[in-house]
Image 1 (cartoon, rainbow, N blue to C red):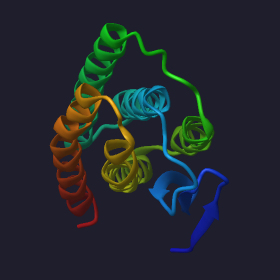
Image 2 (tube, one colour):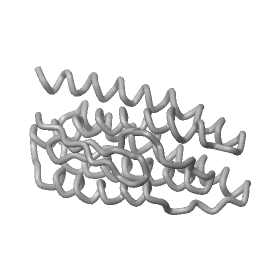
Image 3 (cartoon, rainbow, N blue to C red):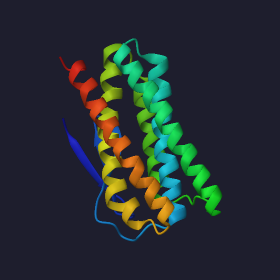
Length: 180
């Protein structure tokens, strides 16, 4: 598999594996603000919900379907918590280079996923979920949590981390089954 790294001005590096785009932490140029962190968190979670909706409509594999349903439910819960918190704090999420890059990557990945069917779709979806969760976990650990200024926002991010790690483990388990 050919891997290509693209370094953006934000210091966020994206790994492109077989057409799938995922953020990976690189050396950061500047600290993120809480409104920027809120935007990244909501964007990243919404993207995974969007991928899950594609999987729910395309897969015939029960394991992939259950995984997608879990992604949609869990990531919507995180969005709901984040929206409630930023509303309480009076913070307006601020679009930034990272959230814009995530959205651009989503367009390409959705196009790729839509072009596949059957086992090829299942493999592409799960492979993307593994890469996406690895990248998001690194970003949460190395940028979002350290940069969060508000204690409640930092706490929310810390509480979401184990859920993301569970998602990664689940995705890797499904990936292993698909590769048999």
